[in-house]
Length: 264
Image (cartoon, rainbow, N blue to C red):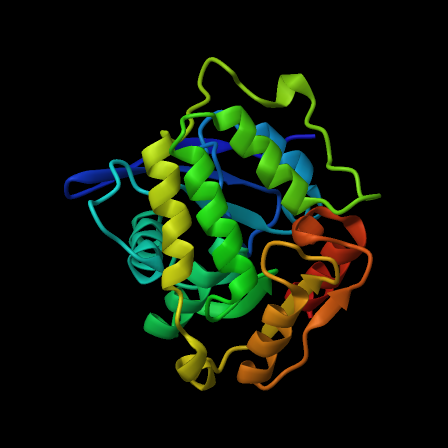
């Protein structure tokens, strides 16, 4: 079944961003990925499989982090990159969904460009760093800067999936190893540290579009309490999936809830 995949590069000033567009629907859904060792290029088939439930109903836009990264940056700057990339692709308004760090970026995108976001989905994210997130980020930065990216991958996987919840295994054919790009240890460390710059708590009341906040009850990266506090600041309640961890957004029951909200 064809999802009309388009991939390319957006060039803005002195930097560029890879992008991918896929899906059979007409309504645009901007998906902002979380912190990742892998860049977007070479992973689109895997994304389609993971988010097929949305690709059947929407036209999904994914914009990678800029290349090269600036010497210093924060979540708000990453949000401006996403906005600039989306406008370059012709988007004036979209449904916006952010996973983890992507949810931090989505908050700033919506706060700084409220006319852009039609509806907002915040998956397993936070409005401000808490001790759980800070500890994990510091550990990931430490491991990354040793250069042992295999150990970093293992550490992240342990945090993403609690015992008894198996990660979805990508088919080898879904990752184009010839095109795949990964962040350097220094790039990953800088992106991880950016998670600790999120600070939207005092501005959440400015978000007026419909918002859905969801989390896994066994989230070891942020803690489910982070999503509960975020939802309270938005004047809503978080939907908590008790058996799931930080990667809850990959699970069918979770995605059904999101799709219901987006289509309402």
